[in-house]
Amino acid sequence: MEENNEGKDFLYGNKITIADIAENLGVSKSTVSRAISGKGRIGKDTTKKVYDYIEKYNYKPNYFAKGLATSKTYNIGVAFPADVNVGNTPFFQGLLLGVCEVAAALDYDVIVTTVKDSDINLLKRLVENNKVDGIILTRNLLNDMAISYLSENGIPFVLVGSCEDESIIQIDNNHLEACEKLVSLLLADGVKKIAMIGGDRKHIVNRYRSEGYYKALNNYGLGIEHELVFLDCYSPVFIEQAVRNIVKSKADCIVCTDDVICGRVLSFLRDEGISVPENMKIASFYDSYHLETHNPPVTAIGISVEDLGTEAGKRLIGLIDGSNNNKKSILDYEIHLRRSTK
Image: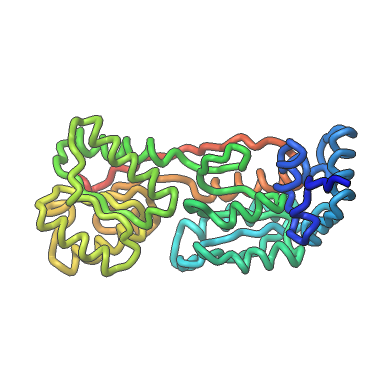
């Protein structure tokens, strides 16, 4: 008797995921998830096909996914990166405030957890203990483990940021365009030599902001001077060394990819007796209260972080309740020209 090898790997003990079922049946992961949970509009034939497959290969859905399908906790999770001090970083404070406001209005509570670049165990525990109905991710990386985990297990989630997978709900600003416009304005105002100090290149937002800087220089017919570009500056030591090199290069201006880096640059320049903007102009690709109230106030790109949180909360709760709208939301930004670049 000829052996049927279809699904053989599964029968020998390998764990079947929603992604495996979707691939073998030629349907999407979301279709399989909705068929299992009973949520959403799935045809009877498709639902039967999914359940026949499950029965044939003795697949048992993960208990946490089953729990999410049959009951609601009325909690949503917010996952912050573990490498930042949320209490001292205005972006994450504002984001959480926006999420909490919309969650409270819709009778949900918020649970906060953290994720590391290579360790998402705290996120897994929150999900697998059936503590939340869905997750908001607040930063994405190249080959992001959290995104892969949530997608493969059919857990509702929203990303504050951007990625290439159009099936994921994304809430973001147009960082590339905003940064290009800010650098272009500086060049149009007569600034000739602009250096950039940026954070970790694994973070997608830093890639977009850097691209904006490069694009503005190219539009003005200026080549990229690599000795003026310092990326992966995620510690005060790296930032200080970058500023020292930029000062030696006789640059006119330093643009920073975020407010934390910008604050450290300003502190170092002050300690060295380098006056802003007389001896060095400074701008940031992200604004905050600290930059707005600095003396002198710092030119920066303003976005409403609270609006990002509000929109992310609305979209996640809508997804939990059965909404199929996965269109990316792009929110507005403003360019605040202040005395640091005059």
